[in-house]
Length: 432
Ligand SMILES: N=CN[C@@H](CCC(=O)O)C(=O)O
Ligand SMILES: [Zn+2]
Image 1: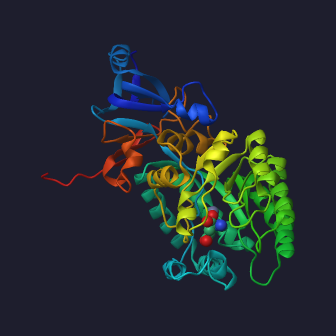
Image 2: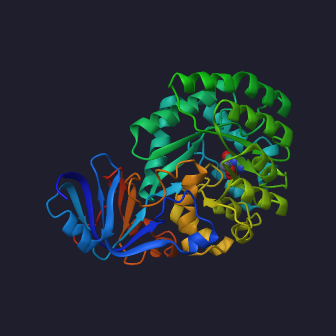
Image 3: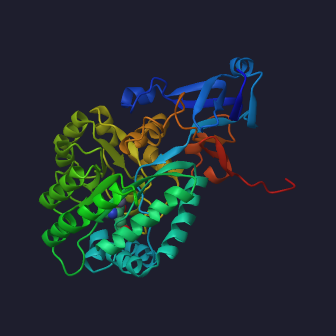
């Protein structure tokens, strides 16, 4: 096929498509059939979208007359879809390494929270930080995620709690959306904690009467583009009733519901999310059997966060039961000052070891299903014709090494490509 194209990736040992029929998500059986082509090539057009996928010889013949801005020889290597991180809190100031020490010494997450630390500590520092400072740290964090293979990431606000700081955080996320290479799904999380000086009902009223109307106005005039609404539905934070009011208010202004639920205590968050038509619920360590059934019927994705369960020594979410019952299981890093991990390859490894998922399941959960959780699986999460050309190339002849080599992604990932453009190429130590 003659003409000009942006990128040819040719002769990969394995090309991991994930799926081939435009599936919006994969359930357990579909995850087990994860689509992989041997000795294959991919073409990405000038518009950044995938134009052709096939066996290397066939693509070579089909495109023998074509011009490419760039060609990459992938012999002996694997191509995978860019990873999707469905849950992060990347905008904040002030680290919490001192709290890590407290937790190692036996303090629980809620002990620290109720003593005024945890989210409150981060809120204090984030309220004082300038927009510039927050943007610079966000940029640095998103670049680290990109180097670990993440090309679509959900970014939450939630360390402002007051309208002014929540908007500051959302503007910072908006700036990153325009200036940086990775794709962003933006989440308003003003109900991440009850602000000091208010109770949960007063905070809920403030969100509904003041925050949401302002978000609606700014979304309509294009100043920001918020995609999702989030609440921390937890004992001692926002109860089921406050959560319901806030999420319904967000849905009424056109936001997708994607919230924290059933993490530390059973709250019936899963049942509520299914009833409200939530796109996704995160954590779910304490989900009930009825909640699992309800989420499966509602096609509400479960975003499981292996780093948090590991770091806080919580019981693991019941991934196997969720998969068996037909829940759409996705993964996220939960990057935040409590769970400081950028790396989806490490998240997949933890999901396999601690949640008993297979490597195929973990990859599907970190690609097509994570994209579904963000409402983006029509354009992201698999390598299929017409989808955005977001890919990673790893220096291994078996794709599973990306999960198997715990912490090895920095050496393994050789290229990260967004819309057919190389946005990261691993540096080589010269002379070796
Ligand atoms: N659980 C609530 N939110 C975050 C933690 C935020 C924080 O501790 O700063 C989470 O998903 O793990
Ligand atoms: Zn979170």
